[in-house]
Image (cartoon, rainbow, N blue to C red; front, side, top):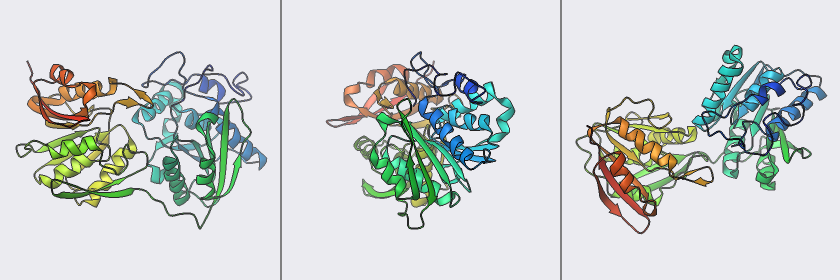
Length: 401
């Protein structure tokens, strides 16, 4: 996410909206519903440099902004709305976090509702379909960048230009190599306000084959299954030790018809439950688009796609109160690089809302986090199912009234 110590309107062109048609709009962008604070901003110098670099490349050829632009990794709408303000006809957007998508939608509705029909959200595999120009924020991870570059190269036009910007402190030369392996030409911009843009153009015919989704096979209690995960999915295709402990000690699920897999990640809990309990339907959800796609890919790989649904959701906002009898959860304990229990408590509280009286939440967590008392307070009576040197698995029974 963009964090920097400059005002939201600062940067090249911001003081002269006539010189930068996007300047006034960018200055009004909000981070909501993401965290807002005086030192957190919805647009940074890298966003502006991406827009300026693309504009410069177009002007060099005497070309207007194209009818359609693809946008990848936009956090709050700076690239999408900025491109429209500069003259693009339409933008197609992929962003992994649901918070980012909703921030873009909110900014669009608040600042430019007349453009609502000109913004389309798409999956990573489709976002650059036929595109000649792609604007993107560089991700932190090289694997994520490789997956995104593969998706662009596979879907975009052969002469596509990719303008990928980032803060210099988060960039490294390996990013250049990732792009150079897939595109014929790579140019690196001069630094401006501690930001740079990598401009990649011309898709290579002899580029490496995509490694995503990555696949890995696992075995728990005699049941084998395959995970198939994108690079941005937490844990990739691995079976993390906490989830393994939960699967090894799942209680009897024979009395349930539906399992709600909250914060599903790579889908391992839902896949295993579907394979071991043929009567179960799995309703999975995650904040990450990559996690949802990975869960669906794993469902197909294990031939249980007819019993597994996965959607992007903010906790369980799509489900009504007291509507579930069984929820599983391996909660994240960090937001970005910040370790915090806040996200776990939010998920636990929404599980409490959705569980019917007598319903169960099966949860695994790092033992040192001491969630058990909070589970008892927020859900109801909580018993320990398993514990090892690192993780604890509990089952909490919802008590209403």
